[in-house]
Amino acid sequence: MKKFLTIGEITKPHGIKGEVKVFPLTDDIQRFKKLKRVFIDGQEVKVSYVTVGHDRAILRLEGVDSVEEAEKLRKKLLVVPREEAVKLEEDSYFIEDLKDCTVYDEEGLELGKVADVIQTGANDVYWIKKPKELLIPAIRDVVLSVDVEAEKIIIKPIRVWSDED
Image (cartoon, rainbow, N blue to C red; front, top):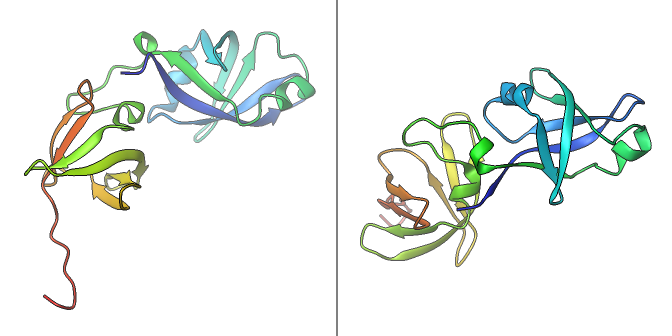
């Protein structure tokens, strides 16, 4: 499992004193209020203060004192050590941990690796790009087991109907 988890992406500067606007890549935007530090490009950066809106967070990062310095951080990812991540409910997983898991059907046929997880609102969808593109709904009737430590997901295949059926 990964030692660091991505929690947000800096989208642009905010104001003229070096604050940055962050798009959250976490289900709980309020978790930003508890941040004391983040890592950007492997470097620890202290968080001076945070304000949270309904869909964005604004952070003041130590050492970032101008709009020009904040602009250099555009598109940078904010990561935290796993031990500082929020606690998950049972049968919940960090998207970072699901990425690169190999998906098998219940017969043992390898279907590919999870390239990304699409959050649709109703349920998540595991996106496999290779060897052929598949979208797998992350629902109990389909996903039989998830073992992020072994990087293995077992699913019950969904029968696809066609005009020939």
